[in-house]
Image (tube, rainbow, N blue to C red; front, side):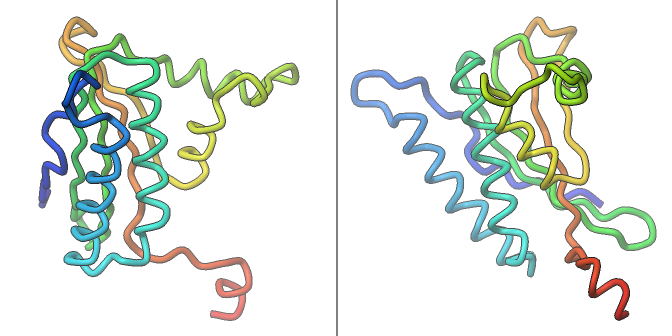
Length: 159
């Protein structure tokens, strides 16, 4: 089962009188927070909002308008639920494996950027970048968060 909630179908480029991407992102955060509460997943709000903000910031900084934000609730076989956040734009996308390889390389550094995706990598159970129509029409950065609360090391040992 997949429940799709279009959070903010299209975010405009900042033009005279148009809503700025920052204002649109604030509105998208509010909608996502309310939707998570409706789904009984309020405990995911902080992580989900941070992940969505990082993905949207990258889209605005490196991509091209229009930007689109959506959130899905997925139910897998066995009852596992996850929340999927997506941010689409008309830009070319990124090579996720190259980004991860830079983190693993001894000379890799987060001082010149890449911290936002590192945060996404830590918080999300999985994430990636899907190119639309071979990259001609843009791409979608996505991240999935497990809906079940994570156990800390102590809780897992005690349980």
